[in-house]
Image (cartoon, rainbow, N blue to C red; front, top):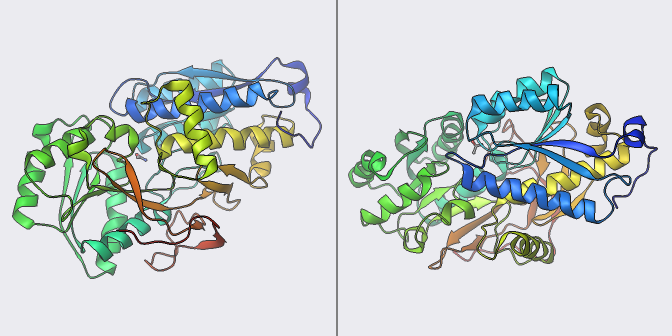
Length: 401
Ligand code: ACM
């Protein structure tokens, strides 16, 4: 049972369960990764309930399938808050869906727990951001790429808000390193291999050092397969990404995946005890081949953080949960995490990994530092990531690539 320190409020005593909303797509463009977020959310809820629930009451998920469609996300968020009378919602992958949902959450005094890396430059008092902000993934990725491959970048992304904004941050870093952005290309969200024809032509024409991909969802496998079919060598010129995780890699051949680079706070292959426990529990529950990406890990630990905060508050009222959230530290699979009271984002552990011949991420740079979230990139330099000074005893800094 989650430990409680405050008295239970009326809702806890009279209700049968803590009802929470869950909004992850099971269909549509980003279903593969959102399914992992849904499953990780339900795994955490099951674990908490098996241990006695929160203040002796179980968490009860109320879930809908928003079909990777921002308008449907908004409609279903409204249903959760107004009809189902739920105040805490776990959900959203694409930034377009978060942006569609947040006005509804704010108007109904709810709290959204958002477990996905995103472009930064946002704060809502009604949102807890548990995925990486740019100073926790873009900065480390850029630094690794400059050191190992060069700084002439071609940018290829899906046509929506996250790729545009993430590319803006990456472009600033490239220019800071006296590098060059050779071109910036956008493809439709549900891109097929033919949609990458222009990107392939541009790579042939400019011969960049690195392709920075902000392609999301189903189009990712199409892009990596097209890249392989064109005969490019990832060992010399990789695709680097923040959105190509285990779920997207599971949809491509290992030949198409090998040699490409991703930065994230968690990889399925992490060797720490907490990571092994989580991955084992996930695969026992959902199958040995089920991919376990960073977005699922954040979906998992944010439920544990929320449950601990409800227990401390004795209430699921966001006004009472919010101040408790920044008082808690939780041993997440990636390392110890906590929420920054000032910006509602999370202290995280950046890592960089390269895909091996089996399509598994092998960590090539593990700084071993927990990094304070800086969503507005106040400190936007390659050498200062606003580390909070906490270093892992086991994850010594290493350059293996
Ligand atoms: C994203 O749209 N935040 C990946």
